[in-house]
Amino acid sequence: MVYDMVRKALLAGLGMQEKVKELLDDLVKKGELNETEGARLMKEWMVRAKSSTEDVSKMASDSLDMAFDKMNLASRDEMNSLSKKVQQLSVRVKKLEAEIKAGHEDVA
Image 1 (cartoon, rainbow, N blue to C red):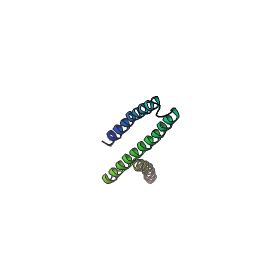
Image 2: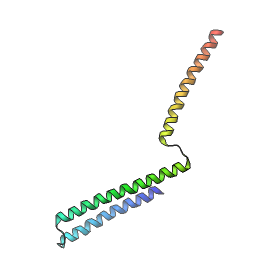
Image 3: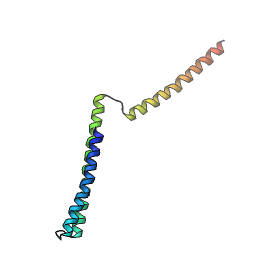
Image 4: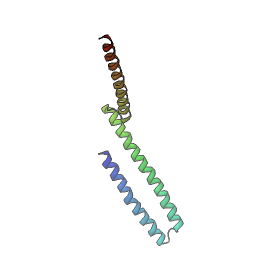
């Protein structure tokens, strides 16, 4: 759902970029802007569009983070950390089992 929303916003932005370029080119052709002004305006629009895209992406990411927090799901880092701890504990259990087994063999 959020992915689709962000995707649509980004695609709309790409279409908007074409429209802005066409508008600026048209203004340059009509002599209302010179090429330098048109290029400067296009660059300024692209910088602002990129900033807006980053803002939308951050808002979507923050919304997802809040949703995951509310669902009380473990993060990828937490899952990786738990996986490492389980592996370490498995190694320790195997060592202890081997020590116990070796101790029983010495008694027998």
